[in-house]
Amino acid sequence: MSSWTDGPGAVGRLSDDDRTTGAFTGDLGELRIETRRVLVTLLLGPAIDAQRQTKLWPVLLRDERILRSRLHELFLELVVDHEQQVAFTRQVVSNEIDVPILLRKASLTFLQSALLLYLREQLLQAEARGERAVVARDEMLERLALFEPGGTRDHAKFEKQSAGAVERAKELSLLRKLRGGEDRFEVSPTLKLLFPAEEIRELTQTYERLREMSAGQVSMVDDEVPGSDEEREE
Image (cartoon, rainbow, N blue to C red; front, side, top):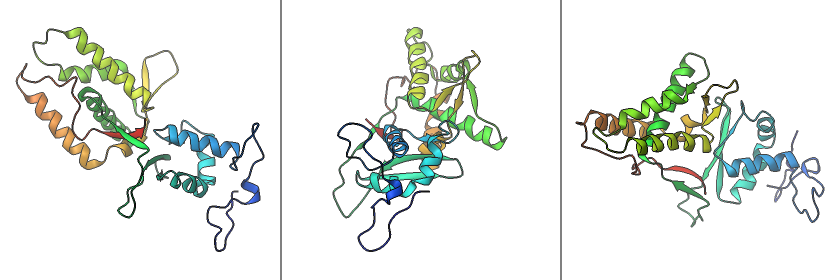
């Protein structure tokens, strides 16, 4: 079990049990190797998921205070959701000091954010049933097809952008391919935390209005959507 030394001036100091000897030539680091792996995974993002990263999660819980200290030195905050068993970092916001920004917001295109809304919806429905959220590639593409402008002359381009939205979700580790040969994916519970409820309501209302518009009046497949930014390290 990790422990911290107590007393004045001891905050952030590791106990002897938490220290490690040089892991490689010239190593000046103090954290144990498994703790360093957790720290690097958090920095790479978007999250650590207990169901997928079974070896990292118990280390994160054991060394949570140490990790918080190291992240605070980078002006980052550790967010741990014990109920969902996921953890991620977010940028510290302060009115007291000028905080250098390490995490930058990467804007999502219209189709990418529309897909994430659909995946979040599937996640919530599956959780209500006490099941894992599993979606097929064809189901995701079928949902995105609802947003194809009527009378479009470049159907192939739209299909390519839809496929790109699926790939983007995979890159963000929000989709994990299931074993078995079928093109099916599990939705990460992290997705529920990345999109606040208020933002979800606003985006959902926007997309519903677009779907109800007359055919051919709107084409946003290439555009970024206001409010669809997501924090992650670039």
